Image (cartoon, rainbow, N blue to C red; front, top):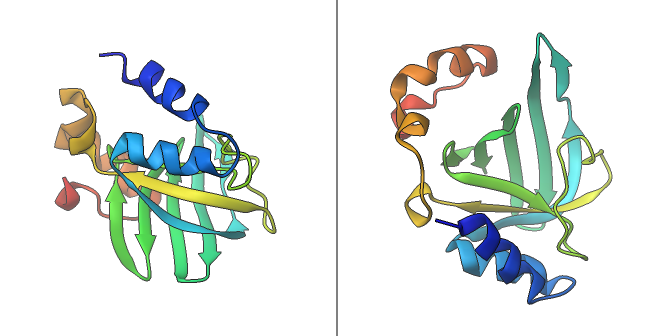
Length: 146
């Protein structure tokens, strides 16, 4: 599968804000929130980026849990995506990918999610044995969402 290349091609067929729409459509996902980063306490330590990022939009607030990448997405207090679901951030004006470290409070991002059933996922990513360390570090439940 060359899904990464196909995703890149889909993104390049659009420009600006339409790139967000093209990405969501290609992934069969959804635009969770387009809004302002209100908090980003992700820090590096012990070889890992760990923390949370909060994005507030007109329809509510998303809290994104980070353990080297986005691992959880909660919206309005409800879990809506859990690794290996796809959780990502794009610049809502350009459609370019925005990294966690670039997402400073006051900046604007579009948070997109797609369920893992929409793209190929390796068996290792679904092995419950890989989650206890991440759950402990993040202080959240992930296994019950597999």
